[in-house]
Amino acid sequence: MPVSYTLFVGLYALSVVVGIAAALLVIVGRKNISLHKLFESAKYNLLYIVIIATAPLLVLLEHAFVSVELNSKEVVYTNWLFSIGGNAITILQDRLDYQILADLSIVIYVWIFAFVLYFTPILILTLDDRATFRRYSLAVLFNYVILLPFYIFFPVTVTGFYADSGMTPLLYIDSNWGRMVTSIDPLNNDFPSAHVSLVVTALLVLVYAGVDYRRYYYFVACAAVGITFSVLYLGVHWLADIFGGFALAVVAYMVSGNQRVQMAFDRHIRALTSKIIKEK
Image (cartoon, rainbow, N blue to C red; front, side, top):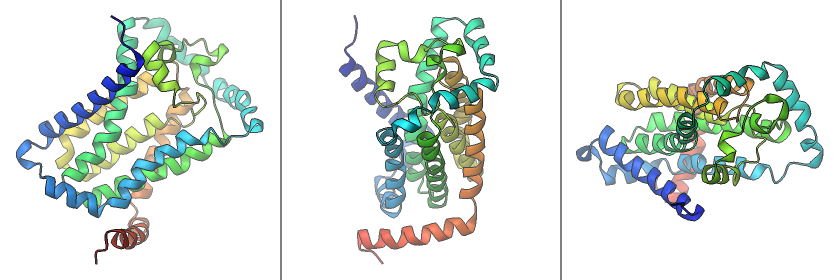
């Protein structure tokens, strides 16, 4: 029985919420989850939470401000990336033409990515690891500071909708998943890959944070591999997008780990947070 699009989106959102709750119970444990500690951690990191929550909205809104002149350059920029081994990715769909693999890749691209994006900060807040949350927030912010100008001034068409690529847009032809993705994706926010950069950024920060995150960062490492494969196989990204995403993640990790940058930024965050919650 076909599922209506509205019901499909509702079930998707519910499944992410349930997945996050279940993961907290498995990784942290029910006895170690304190709502009071979580509230205090959230209050302390209030503006960092705002940064993480609002930064993606800038990317969602940017295509409304892109001029016609810039959009006319999309073909030129896509040709550039196609010339850098564009045909190499067609081997994935040619050799691995299985519907079950396409379905699994879509779930990884949409569901697993969303899970990592939301669960990572929630886990750090639950553990009340303020140093790691500060670094993670700065790394995420740096990602979007770099991604946004590229998406505005360097638009690149997804591989599935570029005729010469030879790729089938497997993600976008799916009735429900494709409709959900295209409702927020202008199909030219390709370089660098935000899916790759944000997941690899989370992985690097968590590995540095230590053993408290070991069980989770193993999962994130697998997710990074799966997402890298999925964005290529589904007809979304070019090889150059992947390399750009990895490079951005490494730079974001390094910048966010600089103590001078952290303290300079945190000083202003702490001052503003104290004013908002009226706390000394």
